[in-house]
Length: 175
Image (tube, rainbow, N blue to C red; front, top):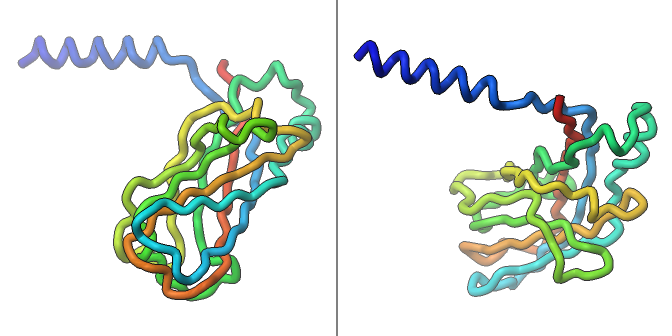
């Protein structure tokens, strides 16, 4: 038993020593909006594309006094999907959510930035998404991006309404 503890401690120590620390230098907030229409079916995925979404990466970078070489990655960190006007809307009809950032010159080139594979029943007004750790710097043009939200439904939407995707992105640097 004592040998196992020593081996475990050695492995933990090696892991901690080998990992460089990654610091978040700054965060940028962005928002995408789209409309869910009554009558969308449950048999196929539905895509909602928002062009010209403001993600003020360069503006924030210049405001901090950092330069592009200081940034290792610019990644998605947090996102929530909710009704736009704070309506009391039961979002149980949504089964899964994927959010992509698209290349503005080639919409077939994309990276997933947020997702949730199965939305638990009982998500009344907000769905919190997991982040993907993809570097998205190359997809930003003049602090603008094309964001596409993919939804699969487990039931028909109860009505037509506007949705808002609140996103936070982080600029990271390795020490």
